[in-house]
Image (cartoon, rainbow, N blue to C red; front, side, top):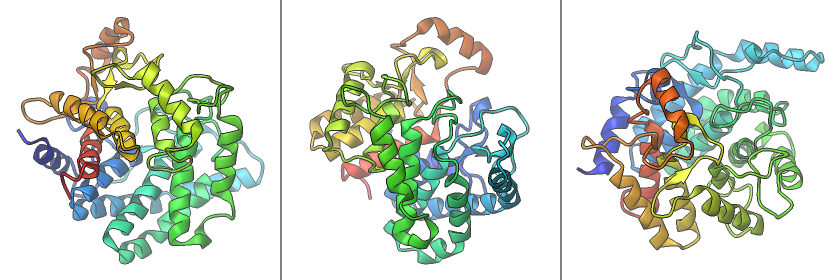
Length: 358
């Protein structure tokens, strides 16, 4: 079984005719397209040379967000008049494959996905030179910047769709990365100094007394999604002492020796398993640091988790942080999602970084 080939096949099979990537095609709760999951799936396809697939996704995002222009205008009007928006006023974090808003309750007010799609689109244009796509999608890019600019410091759900009442460093990093990427392509779209304001805010309020980045403001805990503060979003460099301390704490608190990576220590979702995409992210960081042998250990672990058909799950349940919570989630939603497109996208990114696909 060639996991590279099966990853491409699984992602293409789950890409709707509209261009949307269905996040978990066999999992009841993931029959939607997330901007965040999709951006990393698209980047994985770009890294594997499948630029047509990524282009279709970004075109779908642009079309979908254009359909929400009136909603954004109403929200911004409320903000300008000093009226506090209701959660229903914000843009959703996920859409149906045809670009509609889901009718079921979900944890919608999340900003990291909007940073992720901006970063991903810019990366696609950087890789392909497709300036025509950028020009076609620039109105949707500008709309996204208008949406996040007054909201970036708001409490909102994190990238795991939890903790609505907190401000999350990984979310701020995604916004920093996305806005910085837009500014490289068209500085006029980004308010002057906004990325630097976000970065300064994180480095002032999002660092623990011992010098590591924190999961959320006021916390001392880490979350493995903090890895993307450095790679690829660049809010801090991999050589920055604050990131070094963050990485060391993630390795100490969230890395299982010989295994994968947990999301955060208090994770109870399906008992808190080891996540494929986070193992790939840690390996990506290791490669940036020149720690190639350790990266390859994680690659081998990821490949060992694939099913006989080459499907990668969302998480692995062999060594749970809180096993007493597994049964309740399985009863609610069924078996752990498998395949998860984000897992496959991250695997493709990692293989590209190793120089094994292009």
